[in-house]
Length: 164
Image (cartoon, rainbow, N blue to C red):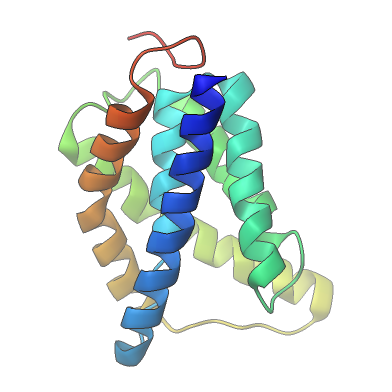
């Protein structure tokens, strides 16, 4: 029960951080997706049985408040979770470089997949622009070590966490 309360706290923290960064960075035209950094951190800490539902709900939450295709973020975040769980055997996510590299790369993957799904299902696209995506992915990657530290600090070692 305590782990579930901690997950809810982290989810609320992720949504507040996402909202703040999207609001602040929209002035400069940056497309920041800090929720993706939280999603990657959840996948590196949680077992797949708990990580996939958490990731799906994070994406679904963004879909409720977005103006794009409903279910788009939930699907792309779940694909990103599959990538992270596949990389977990090869990467040591305790290091800063794998965290930064993974968040940076997945930001481009999620952005491209979001645009592809929009074109596929609605015959329209909402591409934010290359430099907007590049700036947002650089900012998200730079903040990812802090996000990983917070997620690990709050969740600690428990029954829902992966064993190192």
